[in-house]
Length: 202
Image (cartoon, rainbow, N blue to C red; front, side):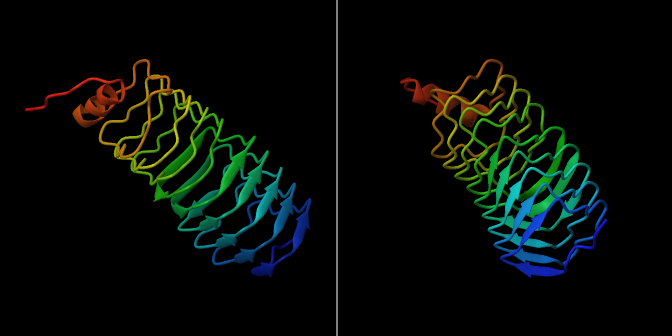
């Protein structure tokens, strides 16, 4: 097991064993992490800018107030990870394991979760504006009070998902699969209008 540096720029870390490492306050910029084991690691108030993660594990790791901005996660395992008040704006997830995952607040604006399996996750109150959720499976997910303005939900599976109170401004749900989706009045009106109905709410 090796000790991670507190700060690094434009470095490539390969096959590092950072199991249960405390990365609190660390800063990594333009770094590449290939098959790095961050199982049970803590990244409280850490910053990762434009970093790439190939493979690797974040299993059971905890992230509080950390930033993963403009990062690229490929085939990375987040099994049982916790993200509390984190900023992941502009990051992309491809072929990642994201269940189960605990998310409490935070800003995930402009993230790409295209085709991701997010079924049954609780994403209440999360800022997902301009996110790409196309082809993602959000079956039975909880998105209450989530900010979805401008998000792309093309062919997204929302079976049984809870969208009550969610901001759906500029969201096109016409190609999403909505069987059993829970909507409040505003969401139901938006959906009806998208399908050509003239809704009178007065």
